[in-house]
Length: 177
Image 1 (cartoon, rainbow, N blue to C red):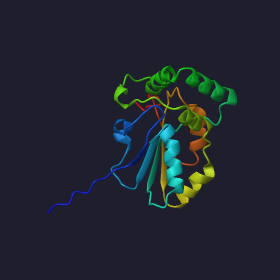
Image 2: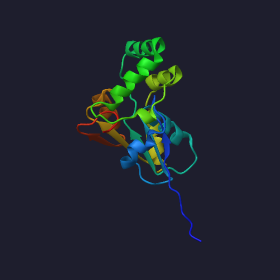
Image 3: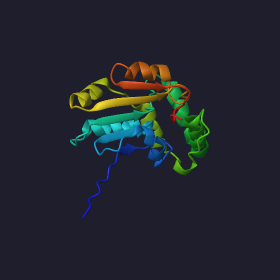
């Protein structure tokens, strides 16, 4: 009898998205010891790895949502726009994620929640958590799109470059296409 071993990546979705893991197959090794997340999901992935007792060899952060250098007024404005029309906000957000590509993510979208948006905007990336994760033997890789319209690419790169293996991909946006 042949035994087929299933490989998977523990994956966390981005704000306004669901089951979009398929969009990132090129970045995800077939490994049960890899954890990955896109944007808001990258924040969740880091927290999962930080708190888990399970073995994790690689943590892959795809366009990690990084807003800790934004002013509080920016964050309040985002929440206000979302609260006034969640559907319109999420639609615009998805368009900005996809830019500059024309990739359709229609099959992966869902309406985000205010609670998720608040968590995404208020999250503080903690270098000490990342260092502790690495001390456990986990490699952290960050992938950023040079044309990202969601996060401040220079601030994000500046934060991660000395902590992780960080890649900036030319001519792609937040979705890494």
